[in-house]
Length: 427
Image (cartoon, rainbow, N blue to C red; front, top):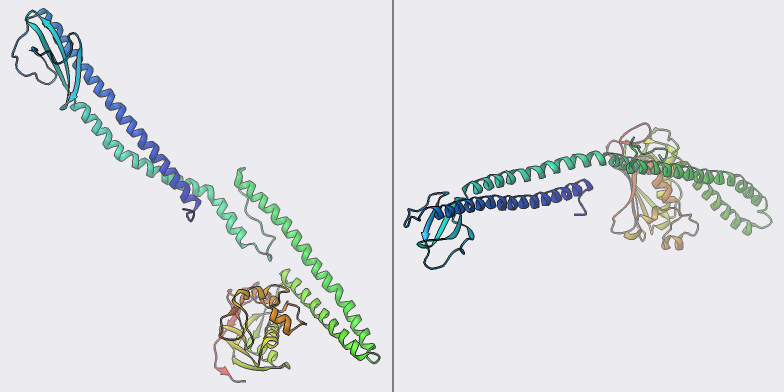
């Protein structure tokens, strides 16, 4: 029941309620009408038996009269004393008739007078009424269900419009608002409240983005100045300066990462150009690395997007794989996208989404790479998303397998890939 829509639940509840009320009302109507009609027939039989009894006081009784016809009255001698008391009428409904009985005292002794009236008209009327109700009640229930369904559809249409619009609102388009109905009911108030909340959320997010961008930008100059001053002191304390320059390099890299994330969060438009994904992968593999990097590249795999961003994504994926690989990293480019595979300890199934969170690093990563910031994979996924693609962790018997796929259609605001299959190009 909980899986049914509100529209369906309300329609079913209204139908059950109407069916119950109409059924109960029909039963009450039939019983009341039956009692009323049978009472009228009994009264008619009573009137007839009273008229016959009154006639016996004026005329002598005719014994052994022929059986009375429908609606007739007949006097019979009563020697047993059974039946109605003298002067009282007794009515019995049986055999399709209402039979009234009374006892009249005559000069020849007590005489039982009976009168009967047929119940056929009552039964016919009740039969017609039952047939009408058998057809009318279900028809009314169906009509009520259809009207309730249509009415709930109109009532819930603004709610569905609000839901679908709100579902499409993300951090990239917080400027959008849900439609507000022209009515002044609860749905309209809900829409206005949601729009006010979205406005406040947009302002808060914009202030946060601006703060991160300003902070990262303001940190670049002091870090560059500090690095230059440390290099001047290299002859006096080379070991100390080397360690300090390493820390400064980390701060500089972190500052750059934060600035890039701020631009990605701000929805900075990407310059759409055709980028050879295989060439980007080959350039990333050409950088010095402590492990072997194997390439499996297909030619003419073209992605439409920002070359600098795609280079940064591939570089982050390769750097992450190199840090965790035991002996080898494999970079594979096909018409489906790009895959980076290492033979390291791998990523546990429970952490395959957390590794893309900002500043999140696995314990293994912390032990093997104390210099990492935990932003590499987060930046890579944001770049993949900005290009209308996905970046996920795939199942692999050993090591980690990160896969970049293009899923969105081509468009000026959503750069996408146009991969074309070609022969494998040995490298």
